[in-house]
Image (cartoon, rainbow over all chains, first blue to last red; front, side):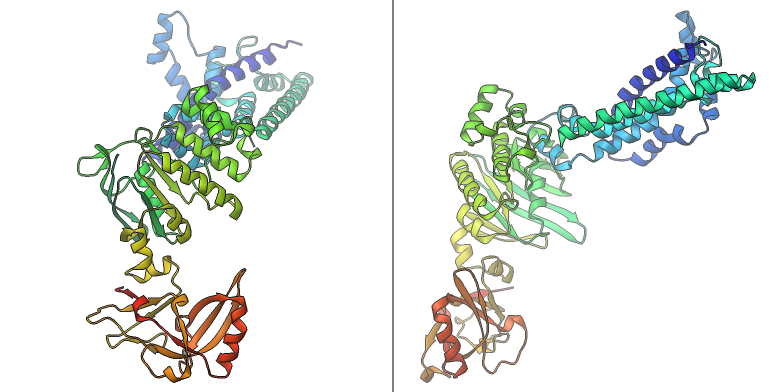
Length: 220
Length: 348
């Protein structure tokens, strides 16, 4: 059995989660500090959550394709994003971004406002307050968001398929492998992948959850 | 020494906050019931809230000026604000809470020693008592080297015993602190012990600003009189008839007051023969409420059939005198005299 879909899925999900973690924190903090236009910007950032994956895939194809500015820029470096694992990672990132962003935003909003204001009156910079107080206090919620968006990346199918295609050994992730196996009537292979995905998802969720409870217990 | 100047307005739901006062070297108190806008005033000074219009200045430094569109961020105001619930960083130990502000381990150690919390230096706020949390918050505030100290009901979350100790520590701190301070409180005793000048806030309006002694001896409004602890207040007409009490009193000539207040410990028992004279009334004991060391006795003028709580005069007396007074009341032999010299004349 070719295990490459497992490694590709891990690589894609990990890259996407790291990227979404950083942008998610920045976006959550930025939106929380907005004085106006919060509702609109929040809606735009959350859009991939409700859009059909095919729509996200279509938009990404146009944005990253060889006729787009980004596609052309990549070509000058002799590389491309469409039909590569990097493209799959970008698709996963788009789809899982709202999960991360909304979770972190909620966690940061839970931080006692008095504490933040105390930090301000004590002369701390906003970024120091974020780094030293808000993020550590919100850690359990943030870890939960990471777990959820990583899980979302693992299960990503539609947008990835449209952007990265189904190239075995290159862009074929596990969820796509299940689909491909079924298409070619290879039920046995499909069943194996299903089992692997279920156990591997469960395992990661349990590990992350226990991490979150340790961290949460310490800050309380 | 820096002078704090505040002259601000801010709309807060139904009421409008109007605060105007100056604090120079002294300790200033904002006294008022909850929801009167005193904490909001403090937050505006600290830069946590933004007034709608007005001016806030500390010495030469303008903190807020709506006409010049100046609104210094809280971080740059150099204002020490002690929060009601301490607002310590829960993820840090006492040491780290102070050290992140002082940025100097030696200074942090000194502060821990000075505020008597060296033994809990490596405890997190959740492992400390209320008093230790409050001391850490104080030390952290001093670590930021403030030019002014703002105290928001600093004892409200402490038990009686602890608040006495912390109060003394804050007093010591303020005595050595070279700058103005503002205390927000609803407790008249606390304010009396700690401050030199008192401002009363009522429904968002800062109504009276007076030196402490004048404030307690001579309040000019019903709100202020209540805040000073005066329990007996009645409306009064020009002829001197206190309508709530049903007692005629002698007002000073030319007085325009509409209410009078009276501290009952100035009441004096007189003989039956004085009945009918001005300021003397036939008293009936209506209720006796035992307190820890004293007993509150509520009187009503015998012919007054009002059932309003304002018609009662409350006098705190020694426990051993209660029985005699109740006995005299039931045999119709209790006559009390109000000393017109001790009446508080209240204009509104």
